[in-house]
Length: 208
Image 1 (cartoon, rainbow, N blue to C red):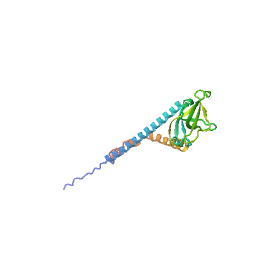
Image 2 (image 1 turned 90 degrees about the vertical axis):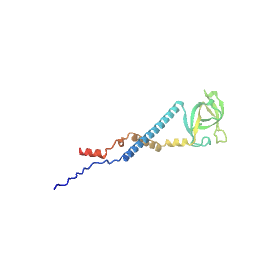
Image 3 (image 1 turned 180 degrees about the vertical axis):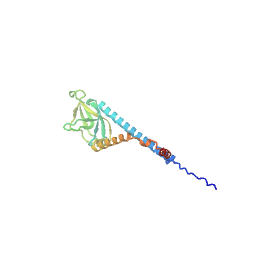
Image 4 (image 1 turned 45 degrees about the vertical axis):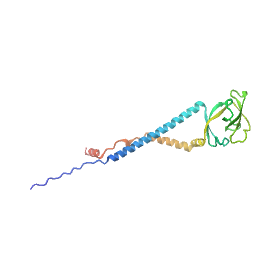
């Protein structure tokens, strides 16, 4: 009597990764790369704009003025930010808003021109200006004898508050930490992008 044939069971290694899981992982890595590129592009654009603005201020001699009083309300309320450019005093006209040094005070005054009178004795561009704040009922007590003023060419409300807050130590420290984190994130090794071996490859390696 013949013995029945033996049945040999062969175990095969199956892949532990399904196509859907691999596609999901690849999609996540793609989203991460795109997000990194968007963040880097945004930071680069902002940095370029800041650099260009700084260079423009240096080349033109312009400066920024933050309004700390309400004498120019409502056009330029407290906390407004104004861009001023150096201008000969005899070239301004009534209605212009100018910044001049205040006698006896370290802070300048920024008011609207009421009257302009040329004064050759003050040198080239010299003039005597009468100023008044938009919120004031009377002109400033004393006229200003100046050769050059800062003429306001643009202003925006509330931006002065943001600028002053950005200069505070906590904000500067936070910006430094954020920049350091961004640099670390940019150059962090992208190990997740390397293809992971499937279960079948692992089985082959173990057999070897």
